[in-house]
Length: 106
Length: 125
Image 1 (cartoon, rainbow over the protein chains, first blue to last red):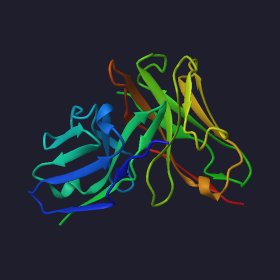
Image 2 (cartoon, rainbow over the protein chains, first blue to last red):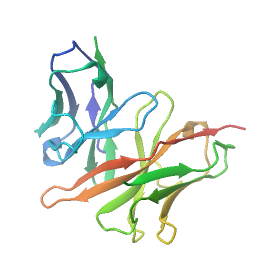
Image 3 (cartoon, rainbow over the protein chains, first blue to last red):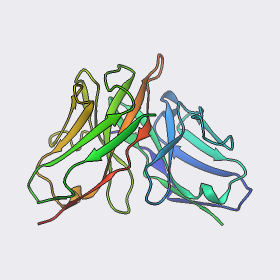
């Protein structure tokens, strides 16, 4: 079965750029999306179809996907961005989630 | 504005059936543009997709749960449901329902743009 791998945690200082990666075999040949989940809340999609931002998502969130790696980039990271982030793709008629990355802003 | 609301028992006994319903309001469930799916999250763990259904009844399932899970749709009530058989403590989780956008030409996209608030289900005797 297809697997997506994420680093368990990433730390960033306020105002700096955070990069969260998601790896999978030939992931660049699929569409990736990213969800943000804060404690006690439902996930929210922040990037879909590799690099598209839903309305209401701040412009500091961006995405890319090439080769075996999709990347979520948060520019000018703010304290409110501290959350768990999950990548997700579709493979062989199934939805696959990455294990999640906890972003700490300190 | 679309709203999804999960409902069902918060406590289920081991070996019994977990049944949840998601009521969709603010828009029709009968659209080929969207799948309707179930996702769960065990305490302190990540997201796990369970399965999805199209308004026509077409379904897709997580292979690891396929033998126990059934997702169905009732367009007359604008609802879709999850049935999970033979539950164990490992099925204790927050269960979310969500709407999924899908499509694409060269590559197929599938992402969940509207989520319910989630409902906690505990499996315990």
